Image 1: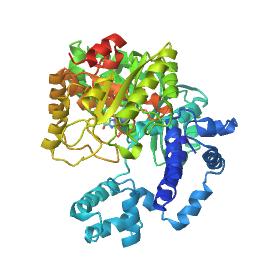
Image 2: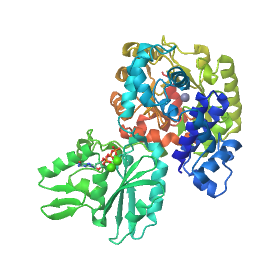
Image 3: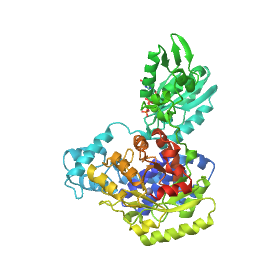
Image 4: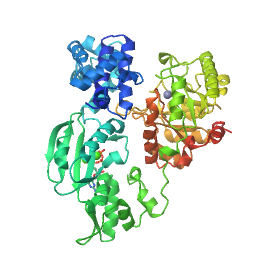
Amino acid sequence: MNNTDIARLLDRMADLLEIDDANPFRVRAYRGAAQTIRAQSRGMADRVAQDEDLSKLPGIGRDIAAKIRTIVETGHLPQLEKLEERVPTELSDMMRIEGLGAKRVKTLYRELGVRSIDDLRRAARAGRIRALPGFGDKTEHTIMKRVDAWSGQAPRMLIAEVEETARRLLAHLKRADGVKRLVVAGSYRRRRETVGDLDILATARKDSDVIQRFTDFDDVGEVVSHGSTRSTVHLESGLQVDLRVVPEVSYGAALHYFTGSKAHNIALRKMAQKRDLKINEYGVYKGKKRITGRTEDEIYKQFGLAYIEPELRENRGEIEAAREGRLPELIGVADIRGDLHMHTTATDGRDSLKDMAEAAAERGYEYIAITDHSRRLTVVNGLDEKRLRKQIEGIERLNERLRNIEILTGIEVDILEDGSLDLPDDVLKALDLRVCSIHSKFRLSRKKQTERVLRAMDNPYFNIFAHPTGRLINKRDAYDIDIERVIEGAKNNGCFLEVNAQPDRLDLNDDACRMARDLGVKVAISTDAHSVANLDYMRFGVDQARRGWLEAGDVINTRSLTALKRLLART
Ligand code: DGT
Ligand code: CA
Ligand code: CA
Ligand code: ZN
C-alpha cells in the first residue's frame, strides 16, 4: 500500500459517506486526510513501521490515524467494506464524472436505481435522466459525453500520483546486484502533467538480477513480459512500468531514446539521416561503427546542438533553438522567492495564518501572500469586508514578530458574472495584492466568459488571474475562454496570469505559458496551498513553466519584494 492507494481508500470512504448522508465534517475529514497523504513525500507505511504518531500530520485526527494504520497493516479498511454493503462502491467512481457530485449521484441511485457507470450510460441513452428534478436535457447530454470519454482508456495518471511509486521502485532496484545507473525516462522525465506509463532505464552488468528484482517488486500485480534486457509489469494501482537494461556505453543514447518524446526523437533521426548517420537506443552510428552514445550531451553535440532539457523535448521548436543558440535558460525551483496564493483556516485552508507563514519561512521564502476566498464563496466561509480587515490586522501583527519573511495581505476575489469583483474597491485597495478568479458560471459562451475577465481586468486592483482556464485534469474541462485575448488583456492592463501548481490544475498549462511569454506577459507560479503540506506543490508549477519555456525573468515571484511590489502597483 503506497500513499496513493491509501489516499484512494480514504477518498472512497468520503464519497460513500457523503452519498450516505453522513455528517459533512466527517466527510471533509476523510477528504482532508487523503489530500494530506497525497502531498507527503514519505510513505505512510514507512511512518507506521517507525511507529510514528500519524495524528501529528496536518488534518489527520486520532481516529483517521488509527484507520491509516489499519490500512497499512492489513491492506483493508473494515469501515469502508461495511459501508460498501449498503452503498454501491461504483457510486464513488460516478462522482468522478464532471457534473455529478454526491447529491446527483444519490438522486440517480434512489430515483433510477443507477448503481454503476454502465447503468448510468443506459439511463442517459434512454432519456430517463432529463426528467429528474435538477437535471434537464443539457445535463443528460453532458453526462452521456462524459461517460463515453470515461469508459475509453484508463485515465493517464497525474505525475504527482506516481512520484512516490517511482521513488520506491528505484530504491528497490538500487539494491540489485551489478546495477549502476537507474533513471525514470519517458514523459515522467519530461515532467508532463500526466503519464501513460513509467519507463525505467538501468545500466547493469550482464549477470545482474535487476530484472528479477523488478518483477518481484511488492506492488506488481501482473508481469506482462520478462526478458533478459527488458520487462513490463502492471502494478496493482493499474500503472504500467517498462524496464530496459542497456550496457553502460549506450547509456546516453538509451536515455535520450526513452526520454522522447517520440516527435523529438523522430526529428533528430531525420537530422541523422541527412548526415548519413543512424541513431537508435544504442548509440549514433556511422555505418556499423558507433561514434557516440555515452551521454546525452555528446549526442546533441554530434548534431551541432546545445543540450536540450527534457521538458523542452516535444518538437516544438527546441531543435532549431538549440542549433541557433537561443534555448531559454529555464527557471528552477531555487529561483522562486515567494508564494503568492494560499488559504488559511479563515476560509477553506487547514492551517492557520501563523503556521502557513512559518512553514513558508522554513522553505526559505522571502515573502508570501495570504489570499483567502471572498464573500461570494459562502460554502467556504468567504471573507466579507469586516473579516478581511481583521485578517489584515492579524497579518500586520504577525509581520512585526516574524523577522525573516514578509507576509503580504491579499485576497482571492471572485470575478462575478458581470466582470465586477466580489469586494468593493476601497477594501481591495487596502491590500498588497489581489488574486482574481472564476468559481461560478463556468458555462458562459466563449465571448461572454472572455469579456467577463477582460472587464474585470479594467479594475485597477486586478493583479493576478488565478487558474485561468478552470480545468481539473481528468475531472473537469477548461471553461470556454479565449486565452490569447486574456493574455493580451493582461498585457494592456499590467496584470499577470497564474500558473497554479496544484497537480490536478497546472493552469496555465505549458502551451499557454509559452503563449504568455511570446506575448510578453509575466506569470506568477503559486501553489494555492490549502495546507502547509501543499506548499511543496511549487515544483509541479515550476515543471509546467519549464515545459512552457519560461525563464526566471518571466515569473514575478522570482523578484525581490521591492521589485514585486512595483509590478503589483500597475503603474
Ligand atoms: P506516456 O507514457 O504516454 O506518458 O509518454 P512517453 O513519452 O513516456 O511514451 P512511451 O512510454 O510510449 O515511450 C517512451 C519513450 O520511448 C518515448 O517518449 C520515445 C520512445 N519511443 C517510443 N516509441 C517510439 C517510436 O516509435 N519511435 C521513436 N523514435 N521513439 C519511440
Ligand atoms: Ca511512458
Ligand atoms: Ca512506455
Ligand atoms: Zn485559491
